[in-house]
Length: 182
Image (cartoon, rainbow, N blue to C red; front, top):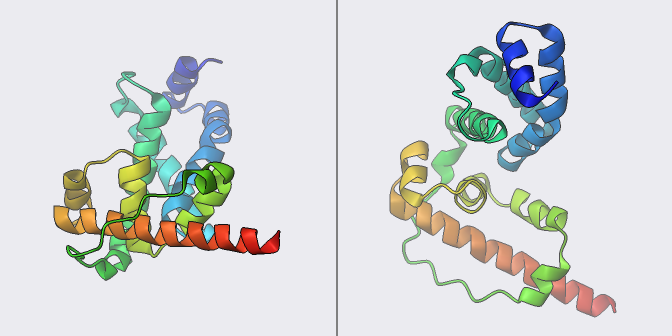
């Protein structure tokens, strides 16, 4: 069954098609949830909630653009809604006077795997991680992030800058540890 047929079968309530859709996308969408939520069990709950929203919202998918992209937006919004409800984004502060990030050592970054880099992102405080994911990975503007999270545009910018600084420091620490191990 191709993607279009799969979507149409899911719209008709076909349980086998729904299972196939879930099996096709659940791993990627769990990854999306885990980028925002540290706790694996909570991320799995959000995954289930997200798929319920996908199946109940299929009629709103107009077959324009990527179906996976449409789904990803549902999962991102689901994770953000959870973060808003749990009030963890309140920890975000406006850091307008943050020092500029020093340029990254590209040799260190290029030697890292995507998994290692994502692990460092995952270790960021929730507010920083959320803004970093929305801006650097999802492609939101700082204005959109501010509107979505209920923070100012300048807070979004400063959170992103601070996240980059923390990542830079962690990458430098990893590099220094690797140099000393040789």
